[in-house]
Image (cartoon, rainbow, N blue to C red; front, side, top):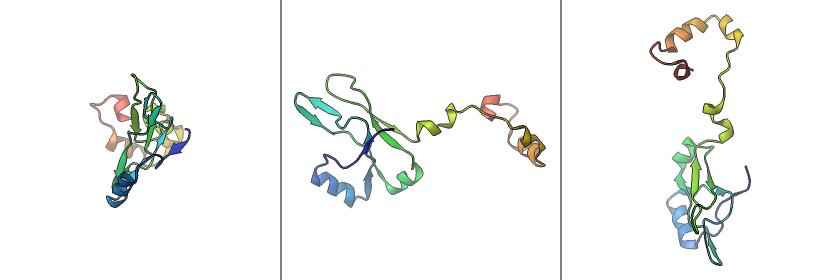
Length: 121
């Protein structure tokens, strides 16, 4: 997905705060600066998280998007890799599942009659 950067351009007091608070800078992918004004380019926007959050969302990442205005790039925090996003994967039924001795029991215990096929899948 591209280069991932982290503590570049972070001032010392802010880096110290992140460390003392037990936080992690999630880094970023994409262009290195979120603000470009004249000859000045700065990495202002970032996402930081504690270890519990990182453990819960281990595949999360931050992406610097294209500028949408005069001088600022928005950032996007994704909780999982786009490639592994299960909503974009088609459902596949394997005929061998039907032969499993507990298949009907599993289907009966999990299938909700009042839901759509999509919701049940």
